[in-house]
Length: 433
Image (cartoon, rainbow, N blue to C red; front, side):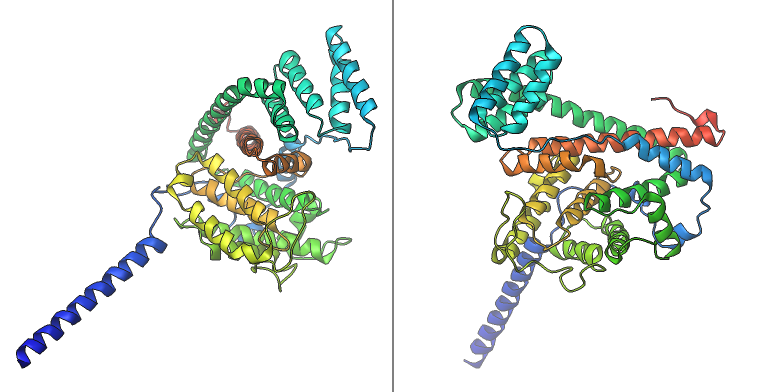
């Protein structure tokens, strides 16, 4: 009898151990499994210097400053955007009819100006948006912009018959153009990889690093010039005439970029990683709220982010999506753009959401073998317009905008590398694109 009791106890103990092991295995697989994609070792992470000495010991000459200014000049493309004003329906109607009349008479330039004016003074008028789209499609062959206008028209008037018919025609064409753009990006990326395998191009990497910080903080309103920013990062000395906040924004972004470089070796992006990026980017400016989710309701223009009590749950869902097969099977540029938009849409922090989202975007791009992308301060309006389009339900303009920024940066790196080869006298290494 005692033997049966002992044997039963042993069997129960073994069974309990097996159940415990199975539970541990399940939890480990569910929460810590590696994503299905195997990432290559990043080759563009060294655009971010590892430590301060890599900047302070670098011999900057007047020639290097010229390269930096030339690179930034390549990226200058400031556009003016008209402000919306209160107008009557009669004025909108008359402007639209005049634009159509000029179009029919062949006066395309005047018609363009009137269509632009009509769309500016009445951005929610479906007839204006649809007619403007038709004009761009017919006279400028700009299918992408036309498709965006048709979508906006349907946002304000879902049953608009002409806009419905037009968008049914253009949507597939635009998808095809977007796919071709992504192929172009991959082709340029491969060329750049080959170029960097032949030479280190240390100077252009350092200059691109400064440009990245300059434009990233510039979008948020920082007024430091490139020369002032360089002086701060190289010497650690105060820039006269600039606020403490502007200094701290630059220093914080530098720390955050170095942290992103460390994260490129990880296969899993966690909430703690995102909090760590935010803590470094904003820590100098607001040490109390940095690395913490917001506890107040916020308003971003016409967009109202989720209430603060929903943020932790939404961030858990976001983390699962970031590391899902669905997300990682996308083209990396699309994946990075959507990761940026989804995070800024949740708006988990009181401040620094844009900077953190752009850093997460670049973490994804660098892990996938692409150079970090910068959104230029001159592109601020286009950037926010694309985000607003995503808020209305069409994420394609935002993905397209990030793809265009990626091409822009690839071209800048390749052109800058070519310039450096010429200036170094090594003409055999020059590749014409």
